[in-house]
Length: 186
View 1 (cartoon, one colour):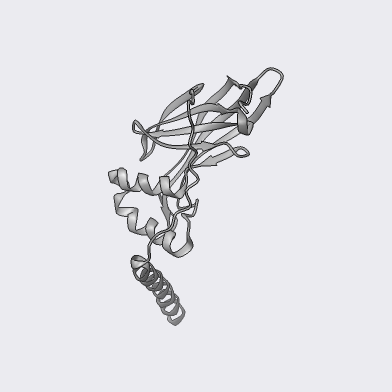
View 2 (cartoon, helix red, strand yellow):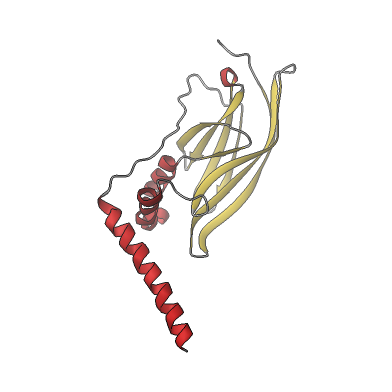
């Protein structure tokens, strides 16, 4: 009995402290590291769309960025281009700034805006286990002789997971692609 009461009181205090920290930080401006890529004259070489939970109609477009010896990914949600990102390794995710814009633009996510801005203010980032939208590439290979790039893509999303409950988690197989990979223009 007494041990249970102490444990419940301790858990309640932790929730109150977290709420106080989030409220106290409400006046602190949010600084977001934005790694957007400015792409000129990009040509989408392959794209695939899917219905993602909460996000709705979501598309990924692939284009080549030969001057960086990599590919670029265009993220589109509900007809709006959200981000252009360079593929680094085999995992590319939306930036915190882009995730925050989704929270503002998708009505179902709007109630979570205080939680997300609280994470940004306290930690300086949005934890991936709370909210992330990523493309995972497997079998990623650039063949410089054939001038092609090949990979298989998965759209992996974690949407508003907090205290063991999630609005949605999903891993959609988008299929594989082989696209032309041009010469660097420098």
